[in-house]
Amino acid sequence: NAGVTQTPKFRVLKTGQSMTLLCAQDMNHEYMYWYRQDPGMGLRLIHYSVGEGTTAKGEVPDGYNVSRLKKQNFLLGLESAAPSQTSVYFCASSYTGLLSTDTQYFGPGTRLTVL
Amino acid sequence: LAKTTQPISMDSYEGQEVNITCSHNNIATNDYITWYQQFPSQGPRFIIQGYKTKVTNEVASLFIPADRKSSTLSLPRVSLSDTAVYYCLVGPNNNDMRFGAGTRLTVKP
Image (cartoon, rainbow over all chains, first blue to last red; front, top):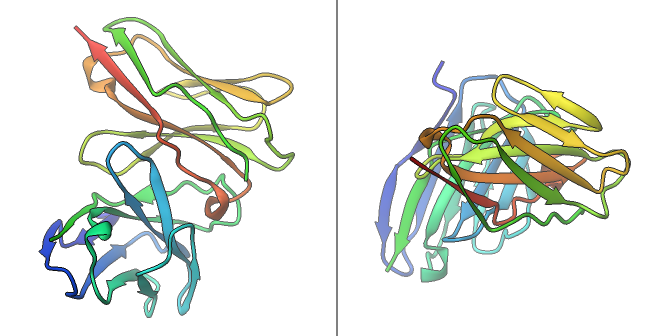
């Protein structure tokens, strides 16, 4: 049982390049989330998914797209990377998200630098 | 969304009890209070959650007064490995909870 895994762990992009971050969970969770964390700040929700085939915007969705084609995977895409997207990205999942009593399980993070 | 306020940082020494207080004046009736812990270069990890009064688990205790406008995370006899950032979150569901800057706890020998 690996929990929540993220690929890649590190990535450096040039401005304007695109990339996809992959999140996978093996806990059969319905809900999945993408957060970003900037230095000295807490995590901010980018997008989330309440189930396979569904996605929704979070607090800071601009510049990102997501897809949830399979229940266990949640992809975060940057179509045209900008230096402002330099951050650490965390994926999380929960059994449901209907109640805050459903604990979120986080992945180890992806450190992205956009030059 | 209920806004939370907690100290930016705290220092402690090994073996001491640490209490981190979080203020959430506009907490709603159906909001729960959840605390997460984050070590450097790792994702946050759930510590404890409560609705009212006191909750205790193997890691911490959570004290919530009757008016629920604040909560206190208590870590008994901290060790160096408890050095981390602690986040207080309030909300009815995961999508409506917000991670603030958290409290950076440093435990010294």
